Structures are given as structure tokens and as C-alpha cells.
Length: 233
Image 1 (cartoon, rainbow, N blue to C red):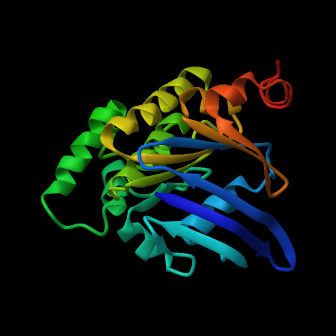
Image 2 (cartoon, rainbow, N blue to C red):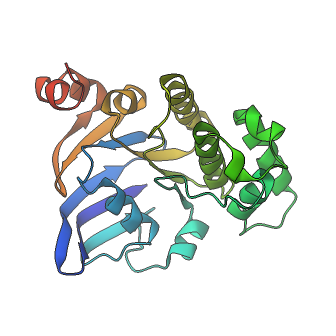
Image 3 (cartoon, rainbow, N blue to C red):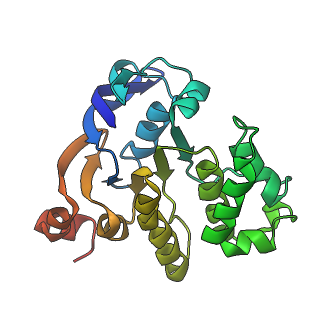
């Protein structure tokens, strides 16, 4: 579904991605793990079209989209739940969700919202309240639900567990794991390597803008280098 070929990106004169190559097959959950500052968020921003690419290519469903504008990538089926949630705090929960479906005006929007409420029941309770009044965990639920309102075939998730209590982290990962049953392919970026690898099919390890390891998620969890560097074992 998604192929990244020798991707490079810069902030000014400073190159932050140094030839990233990875792929995501349809129906997979693939995670990219690594320390803060490894370039994981920049990678997702390149895929979603927010961050310019200086070299290399992005291929989605067989079509090169490296220079396609971000809004057209949404039409093709790529949506993102960004790092830090970035919800519209002065709008209600329901208004945030409807903004996620801005491309659509059909009857299915209400059904999509109902699906979101089934996935995250607390959002139904707070649908008419300002999103800025939600807890951190509830805001993360809203950010994911808003991205799903765009009807993605490929969902980009950037640090969904950041700053959350362990119980909420598990709830978020359970939801992400359940997206496979909805035919949503997921590329998950996480500092929580163990939690991310537990629900993933495959994983990539990213360090200072480069992929240093990759393989089946179970193999990465068992690798002594990963266990020592990222799992604290």
C-alpha cells in the first residue's frame, strides 16, 4: 500500500531524514520506534504532505505522490492523527469530528460519527462540550476519531500514547489493534516501543534520521539490542 524510497528531508540546510526506505502492506500495522528526535514525526509529515521532501519518493497504491498536495492525499486515503493531538479546542467534540469529514457531505458522515462514538463512548457523552475541556486521554481519542472520519485506507498515528496514564495507553493501543478489522492499514510512530511492537505486524527502528533495524515485531521485541535500548530490559 505504501512505499518509501530513499526519502530525504531538510529543515533549512539541515538534513533530518537521510535516505529512509520502508514499506507498509495493505492490512498491516507497522510501527516505527525510536528515541525523541530520531525523525519519526518528520517522516509522517512527509508522508501526509506537510513537510517537503528533498529527495526520494513516496508511492501510495502504486502511484507516486511525492509532490501531491496534502489535501489530495487525504482524498486518496491517507489521514493523520498528529503528535500533540492538535484538536480545535474552542470547537465542540462533534464539530471536531465533522471537520475530520470535511471532504464528505453524504449520509454516511453520521454513521461514521456513530462508529466513532462506539469506539470511544466518552466522546458521545461530551459531544456538545468544547474539546479544550477534555482530559489528555480524551483529546487523544478525539484526534484518532477525527482522523478516522476521513475514511482512511492508511492511517498515520504519531505518538498516540504520549503523556497518557498506563490504563489509557492500553485502551488506545487496543483501539489501534482493532482497526485491522475495519480494513484500516496503520503506520504507527511511537516512543513506547514495547506497547507499539506488541500490536504491530512489523517494525522499524529509527535513529538520527536513519532506519537501523527492521523485521517482524516479535523478532524485534526479542532482540537483545532492542530490549536494552528501548524496552529497559
